[in-house]
Image 1 (cartoon, rainbow, N blue to C red):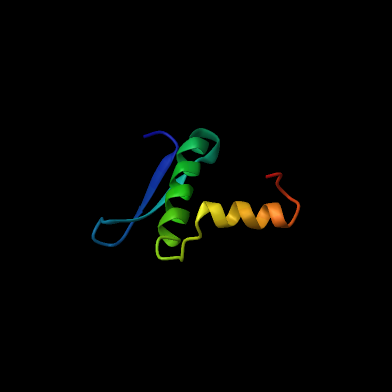
Image 2 (cartoon, one colour; image 1 turned 90 degrees about the vertical axis):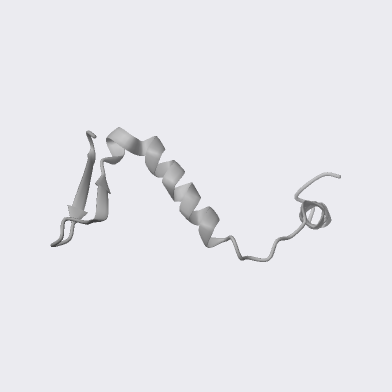
Amino acid sequence: MTGIQFLTDEKGRKVAVQIDLKTHQDLWEEFQDILVSRSRKSEKRIPLSKIKASLIKQGKLRG
């Protein structure tokens, strides 16, 4: 695949990848989004209704 190179260990196993961002910008952005999503998987969730109420109270959103 053009624009993608793999780094292998002494046994030939792929251990890292180098991506040409000029060629694969969209691919990188999707990959980055997945990593962020997975890293936040166990975070406490706040209901949208509470977020909206807080923004309205702060004057940052009209109710």
